[in-house]
Length: 321
Length: 290
Image (cartoon, rainbow over all chains, first blue to last red; front, side, top):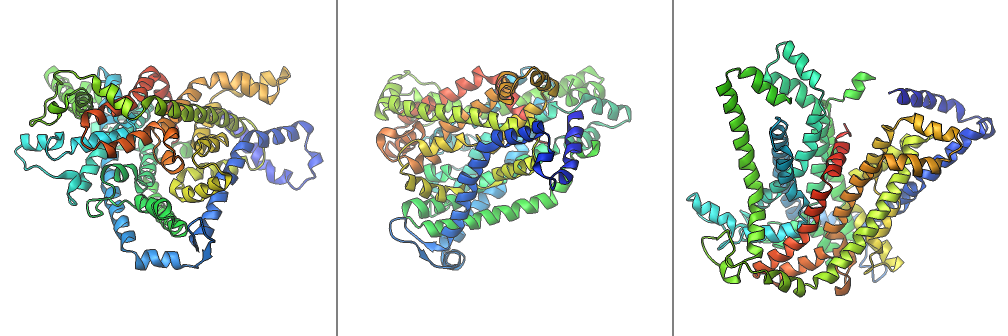
C-alpha cells in the first residue's frame, strides 16, 4: 500500500517532468528509466514482432485474394461480402459455435463454482477431491478426444451403457447431428475442475472476519453467501466468464479430431472452418477475413458482457483507495 | 473454519442435523468425485483389455486377463520414443524461454519506475484478450518467409520475447509483494539492478516462477494446433500430433488408442502430483487478479 502511494505521487509529477530538458533529471533517475526500458525490451519487441506486426499484416490480408504461391490480388471488401452473403458454411459454422458457447460457458462456470463451494466447506480430504476434479483439465486435449470418442461408441461405449441401465434408448452420439452437440457439452463439462481450483483459491482468500461480523449482525447463511461470498469472488467469476467466452469461441480440437466437422456439418466449428480455408485450401485472404469477423464478434460480446455484467463485479481495491 | 462449515455448526446446534448436513455434503462430493473418475477408470481399464474384451456388451470394468502388450504394441506403432523426445525438446526450450523472459520483463514492470510503464503493461495485458486465431495466419506466413516451417522454431522462439503477457502479469503481481527494502538495501551496497533481479528477486520468486513454468511446460506438452500447423514431417511430430493421427488410422483398436492416451496423459498427472504445492500457488496467483 505504501509502495503504491509513492508510485502514484511520482507518476503525478511525471507530466511536469516530461517537458523539461532531459539533463534536468538526476543521473540516477535517468539510469533507472533506461534500465526499465531495457528490462521490458523483450516484451516490447515481442509485442511489435509477434502481435502488432501480424495484426497489421492480417488486416492487409483480409482484403486480398491469396493462396501464398501466386501474387496476392487486392479484392477490396469481397472476402467479407462472400462470407456474409455468399457462404452458407460461414453461417453454419457461426451457428454451431454459438450453440456450443451458449451452453458450455454457463454450465462449466456453474459446475466449477458449485464444486468449489462444496470443497470450501472444510471437508476432510479436500486436497484429494481437488486433485480428482482437476485431473481432467490436465488431460491432453488429444487424449481426451480419443477417450470420449470411445465413451460415445454407439455399441460398446460407456455412455450408452449408462443410458440403457437407466432404461433409456441408446443414442448414436457423435454420429447423430442432433446429439453430437450435447455430447460435446458433456465432454466439456468434464473439464470444469480447472475453474474449481481457481474459485477455491478465491474462496479461501475471503477474510473470515467478514463472515463473523455478518453473523453477529444476524445474517443467515444465504445472506452471508449472497452479500459476502458472491461479491468477494465476483472478480474471479467475471474473469473466468470472459476467458471462457474467448476460449470457447475458438474451440477446435474436438471438432477436428472427434467428428471432423460432421455429421452433416453439425460440429463445423468456426475455427475448424477457418483452419480448412487457411491450411487446406490456402485461401489466406478469405481465412483472414473470417478471423477478423470472429475477432469483432468476440469483441462485441465481451464489451456487452463488460457493460452489463461487469458493473455487478465488486472490486475491493476501489473502495479502499 | 470455513463459511459453510460454520453455517452448519451454528445453525444445526442439534448434533443430528449437523451430522445430516455433513453427510449430505460428503455424499454429494463423493458422487461428483466418482462422476469425474469414471472416464479415467474406463480409459485405464480399456488400455489393458484384450481386443475381445473390448467388444462385449455390457462393458466390463476390470480387464481380464491384463494385457500389457497393448502398451508395447501401441507405443511401437506410433514410434513413441521419437515423439516423446521431440515433444520434450519443444517443451523444455519453450519453458526455458518463458521462465527467463517473463521473469526478466516482470522485474522492469514491477520494480522500476519509468514513463509509460503502466500504459505499456496495460497494452501488453490486453493482448491476452486477443483471439489467438487472428494472429495464426499472418504468423504462419511470416514463419514461411523465414523458412521456419517444419522446424520447432515457430513453437519456441516467440515465447523468448516477453514469455507471454499473462505469465509476466502473474510474476509482476508476485514481485510486488516482495518488500522494496530488500532491493533498496542491495542497491545501497552497490548491487546493480541485474544483480538485484538475479540474486534477490529470482530466489524469492521461485515458487511463482515454478508455477508459471509448470503451466508453460504442460501447455507445450499438450499443444495440438501449433504442431499441426507448423510440423509436417513424420520424424519431427510431437506426441499430440502422433496420437491425433493414430486416432484416425486405428479407429477401432481401442485398446491401443487408450494405451497411447494413458501414456501421453501420465507425465502431466505425475508432474501435477509432484508439484501440487506450486500448482496451488500458481492458481492463487491467478486468483489475485481481482
